[in-house]
Image (tube, rainbow, N blue to C red):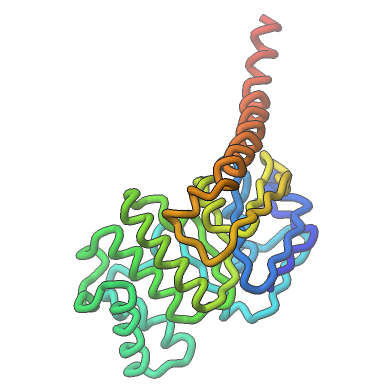
Length: 262
């Protein structure tokens, strides 16, 4: 479904943020990217979506980019359009007629639990409701590959749990392939087939891969009780802590040199 080969990515003339990224996703696989803040996780998603041109390397898709959906950390709803019209817009861009697009938009509003709220504008919706509209906006296009960048990080724990569980049902039902960026390591283990740890930047690359030996589909309440869950989460935490510790030591080094010189 997705093949990334020897990808490097830099902003301007600065040192590359990412380097030597090799990654392959098979159809129906759910893979999470974790790593220290600023190591280039979101940049990698943007490169897959062709929103950021790589400095070198290749991104190859088994589907057209029209079959790739992107669920952002902050919703991308247009404030001057109603919830229904926000969902319908993507459908119109993909060729649906106005009446058909609005009909499908209302169907999706019902599926995400917002029936009767289609005429409301984003400012009139709660954070959880806006996120439901954003999910409907993406899933209405029936993506084969779904990219997610911290999609639920701004929500409270209960809303986040229910939205994640609902999204997981749609992913399973549509047999989507997913590449997700998250800072929540337990979420990564609970949802994924594999978790990839990016090392510190600049020149960050995939340092470790953790296979998740838990059968799918999964119940998010019960999966954390599986005997493999806690040990795997602990290994992931330890690996990330080492990367963060290395980064802190790198940042502290110049000051230490100055102190010694003084």
